[in-house]
Structure formats: C-alpha cells, structure tokens
Image (cartoon, rainbow, N blue to C red; front, side, top):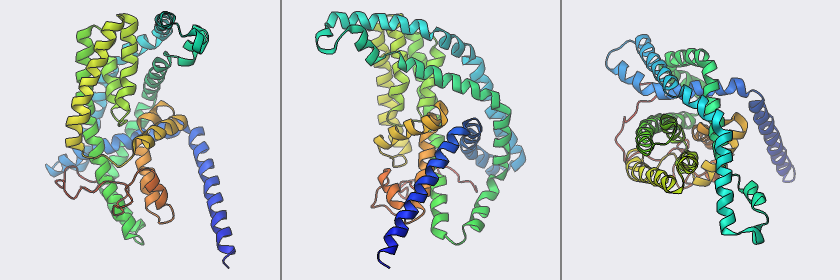
Length: 366
C-alpha cells in the first residue's frame, strides 16, 4: 500500500501537468475569443463599484447598468478620438525612430570604444536592440486598437455580466455549498480585487494626466499617447512604470538629444516616486501579495499566451490563479510559492484587511 500511494500521487501530478499544458495551448490557440472575454470581465470588475453606488442611491439595477455602460462607451469614444490618430502616426514612424536611435547609440558606442571587448559596434548594437521597447509599445497599442473591432461584443458581454452581478453570490453559495471556506475565500478575494482595480484605475488616471502634462511641456511628440501608455501600464505593479517610461525617453533621445531625454526620465521618476511610493501605498495598501519576480514572470507568461493585452491583465489573471490554487489543500503550496505569506490565514490570495475601514469598495452582491 505504501508503494501504491506514491505512484498514485505521481500519476496524479503527471495528469495535472498534462492538463495544464493542454489548457495553456488551448488558451493560446483561442486568443481571439479569450481576450475579448477577459476584457469584458475586467471592465465588469471596474463597473461593479459605481453600479453598487447607484443601487445604494435607489437607482434600479437595469437603469444603473445602462448608466455604467454608457459611461464606459463615452470613455472609449474619448480615448479613440484623442489617441486614434496618434497611435497610427506613431506606429507608422517606428522604423524611422529606430533608425535614428540606432545611429545615435552607434555613435555613442564608437566614442566609448568598446569594440576590443565586445566585438564590432554593429554586433553590440544588435545585441542591445534599443528599438525593441518601441516595437513592444507599438504592438501593445496596435493590439488595443484591434480590440476596438470587438467593442460591441465586449459591451454586450459587460451588460449581461453587470445584470447578473447581484445574483452571483447566491449562485456561488449554492454551487459551493459543500465548501464554506472556499466561498468565504472567494468573497474576500472578490472584494479586494474590486477595490484594488478600482483604486489602480483612479491612480492610473492621475499618473497618465501628470505624464501627459510633463511631456507636453517638454514638447515631446504624441503627449496624449504617452499619458495613455502610462495609464495602461499602471496596472502592472513594480515594473509597469519603468516599461511605460522607456519608449518615451528613447523618443526624447531621438527627437531632442540626451539633455531633454534626461529631463523626460526625471519627470517620470518624480511622478512615480510621488504616486507609486508615497501616495499609492497609503491608498492601496500592500497590494495583493505577489512578489516582484512573480509579477515579472506573470507579465511574460500571460503576454506569451494572450499577447500584449495579456500583459496588461497579468496581475488580475495571476491573482485568480492564486485564488484557485489556494482553495485546495493539495495546491496551496503553489499559492505560497507565488508570493502568498504562509503565515497568513487562508484568504484566497489577498492580504489581511482587518485593520482597514470596511466597505471601501462593494462586493458583487452589494
């Protein structure tokens, strides 16, 4: 019997790994369907707090859903009208910017005379590939622009999800009646995720506005575009602000030279020090418990599966995975490895908020 149990456990691990591989490649193959659905879920989570606020004010659920969706449509229309042309112009000029950037960096490397140690300047430039950051931003922006083709599908899905929000807790209670711990963990996770995404959205707006004003003062091309990029990458904690700053600094280097590029970098540094290190921790708290390494790896992993949109949704997706892993005693060790403090009480991968004021953000059943 003692030999049989390890074999059974090993067989179960192999089956689970095989199922995970099939699931991962299935998600990658179905990217065109999965990405709009995940964006619908993401927008629904953002829309839950204002919907709950409207319901507390006595607005009927149907009317509240309509108001929230109309607000989302107006935001999308505003973003398209503000940056639609900028995205097209910037992506079309990426090869030109890369050529100028390569020439400037090649000139710098020639002055440093690193050829004896690292080989020819051109080989060293190919290894560094400074234009890759602009390629990545262009890919993200083109991906976001491509999502607009699914606008009506996403909005209809959001409408139906918001309409079902009030009944989700009862459905979960019925479906998970055999596991009270799992239900409580999901409720805590849902409340924290709603609060986290809502606050990150507000902080991202402030960051985007500040970045837009700064680069506009310095005369950088496409200031609204860089504000939107800063807003989008604000959803990626720890390293998102760095990723958002790199292409703007490189563009400043191409457009104005080293001096103005340093000013752009300094502006990003000050903005992110004030917002990311002083204001955000006081409002958001310790976040959702993921280590910096896990955040970076999740960025790469979800970006590989779902493309650039997967990078922007990497943290919510990883937290959902953590919640699923922590809900079962056999997989809880993996949730701990992903960054959850082993000394904390099981809570679906969310930090203890007992010291915070309750009801900072409504849950799905509000």
